Image 1 (tube, one colour):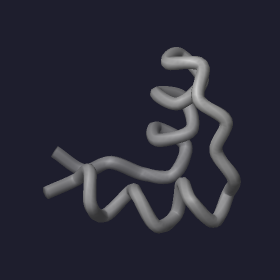
Image 2 (cartoon, helix red, strand yellow):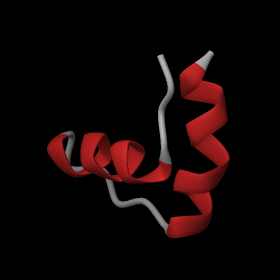
Image 3 (tube, rainbow, N blue to C red):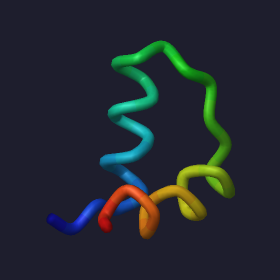
Length: 33
């Protein structure tokens, strides 16, 4: 499953986690594995 930056930000929002654009970009490939 491919996870993009927008998906990471949406998940963080649902979990009420503050996340920067840089963090979202870094986490997207990690969560896609």
